Image (cartoon, rainbow, N blue to C red; front, side, top):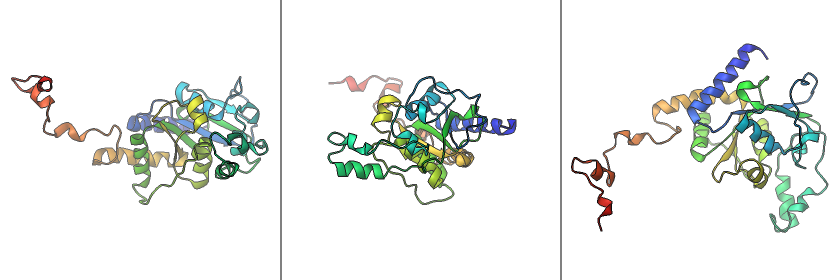
Length: 262
């Protein structure tokens, strides 16, 4: 990867974090058809789920290449377009607990977006600032206020609305496959697997952004911060407000904790 492009990715990752204050590394995702030439990139030592690999990169800065044999999840290989199908009628394993009926489970599975079987052979996952290629997608975890900045920054020049859905499962499809196919940011509520294995937060959502849009989103986020638009952290308007009780009573020359009065 040319040094100029690497420096650009470092700058984008730094600016994104300055503007949105994420709790980990902005993660770059690259889907790979031909793995020749990738021999120097580490492979996982143990089989793990795709969501675990992404969270390892997000929280610890790990870079790796994973293919079907590294996936501990039955579904992720087919979702990513690797040449490995899901077990036959995999949806049946959710009947009776997550889904009430076979029809409901089958319908939910039919909504999971996938690449064509054999379209890719591996996935490269790395912090953007250390990525050796320009990724297809960048991923981060965050709260609703942070997601609002991404949405507002994307729509600032376009207007309209962003469309995304949640199935309670297949979150990796929502923030990788759907992002690449629609060429727009997507937000997903983490499903059970991602929450149990890789993102236990009660409030964090997952966002996937097409890499080629990242510079535009960063630039618009910076503008919104100066114009009173959507920003993170959100609380700044109060810095010129009149001081409200009860703290206003405490800050007076003869102030006292009025809230303690019976």
